[in-house]
Amino acid sequence: MSRSDPRLYLPASEIAFAEGQTVPLPPGQAHYLGNVMRQGVGSAVCVFNERDGEWGAEIAALKKDKGSVLLHRCERAPAPTEGVELLFAPLKRDATELVIRMGTELGVTRFRPVVTERTNTHRLNLERLAVIATEAAEQCERLDVPEILPPESLRAVLAEWPENWPLFAALERRPGDDATVRAAALLIGPEGGFSDTEVEMLRRHTAIHALSLGPLVLRAETAVCAGLARLAAGAESAG
Image 1 (cartoon, one colour):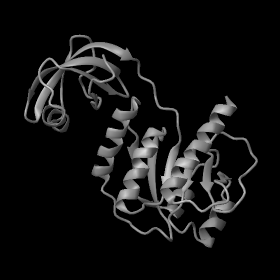
Image 2 (cartoon, one colour):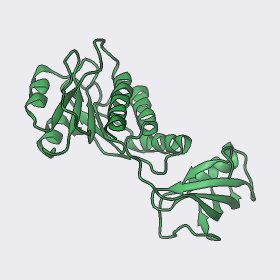
Image 3 (cartoon, helix red, strand yellow):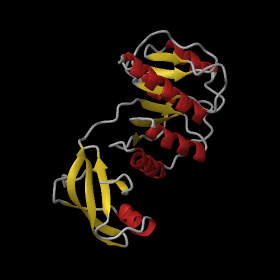
Image 4 (cartoon, one colour):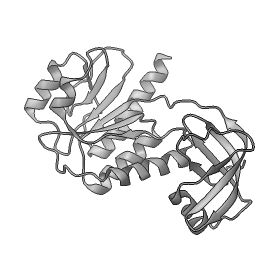
């Protein structure tokens, strides 16, 4: 397997990966290999999923949107991505897609869009976002693709949030907590920030920890990257 070989996510199915096993390609992946990457029968590829790990393979059959790969050997054993859940207020289309792409590359395990008082859009193309997350996982060499949940109201999510599941919230111009706890999730608000009512609701919740991202006001998608980087650095320091 070479790093230049196309890397494809094949969702776990009834067919378990094994040496000499032939696995069918989803129509989109077959189309991508043949029409975008200009690959053909015998071309080397890499396939992976969260259950079977990463395997070196070759294209066994390919025609239009149909095809299959022949598995050779396991190159990496299954290993879940170590990261946090990301709760974020949906943004405009391009910004939301950027959040999904960057969050996947930064190890987000699950995306939970939350509707706040200042959320500027309530419509998400979840199918399109899933494709973006898959492409990002293929590019960054993680072995799984994060789940993307349908939007929920922030109030409803917090009402059911476990008290022992630390959720760090990025609150503009507010100091971060001194508590050294390992984060389970990160909450990023909308452009314009949380309302005063929401800030008070967050401050009263026992699972919430304030996360400072500095004195400057960041765009929401920038805050996602900064917040995830801060939490990742904290997790490394904690060992």
